[in-house]
Image (cartoon, rainbow, N blue to C red; front, side, top):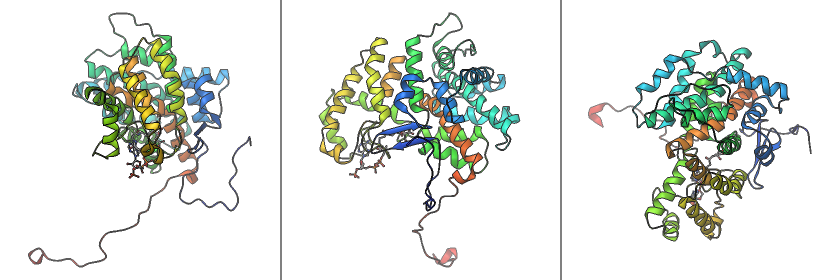
Length: 393
Ligand code: SDX
């Protein structure tokens, strides 16, 4: 029914986090942000509007959205000393640890917005992160290609600004392709939140110690880097590339997966919660063909991905284990067609996930009842025993 969920009086929380932000039904393939179905938001909303919805709980009025956008635009620049931060990294550094280091460093430059219990500080750090993460991400990319950094252009929207700082050059004008911006905007919406996934739980856990928003999000970025989590979109491209390099023999690869060869998984398949299909993957797949065609990309890896998906969806090994494509299976192909190198795929996931991390951190700080708290364990080590001096061991 419409309205807000009310917990039965007899409800006892068995250690789960309570949250009012995102709802997932893994069996039915349902994903809703603040009650709105992901399918509607992906088609009708924008990333900045969805970010507002996740953080403040309601879709913004036009005035609220305009005010939110202008507040963000005022903070897209990085402190000049933070820009020099990028000079210190090796050129072949992976952009994800660069991202988490720079986000952590924001807490050293913006000490006027660190108090989790000062509403003005929370607002300021929220807006600063939303504004500066795309700039930091673009700079992390420019570092890997040895190109000069571009200052943000606040006449552009958040996504357009990021694309221009990533692919533009100081020596010539760069016009953002509106199709590219729209496609990336939709992908960011799809990644914006996903209840208590690994990286979001990390942000909440670190924040539960009353750590500030910048360092809590930096911890989330590090968790997202893991190949079983956000790093999967990068791993999917590596998997497809290895199949191509091995003559495109899909059946041979599937046999290796089923034989459980160490380190051989069907990346982009499976999910801890979705045991039918990931609604985001369905949306990405629907738009992948159109986006890739509009970008003029006829990627051989896309054909391989489709063949691999077709084989896996009809193979009992995967059906019995409820392994279906997740959000990461097709996104990497689109990012590649947009011109991003594989190393940037998880960085793009982080930009998309940022509003969710912020919303979940704020919810936890504002309502300690939603705190993850201190996890307990089942002890399986030695029982008590006495110390034995060195020469008697
Ligand atoms: C994300 O939590 C979130 O919401 C995450 C996320 C988000 O938005 O934040 O949705 C983003 O992280 C998506 C997932 C991206 N990761 C991958 O695509 C990596 C490949 N997938 C897996 O590693 C795995 O599927 C997990 C970790 C995602 C989920 O694992 P589960 O559901 O806990 O399943 P499991 O590890 O307990 O495995 C169950 C069985 C095992 O076989 P058996 O021991 O029963 O014989 O399924 C097998 C596993 O070996 N299995 C796979 C597999 N995933 C599970 N076999 C081959 N390929 C796979 N991908």
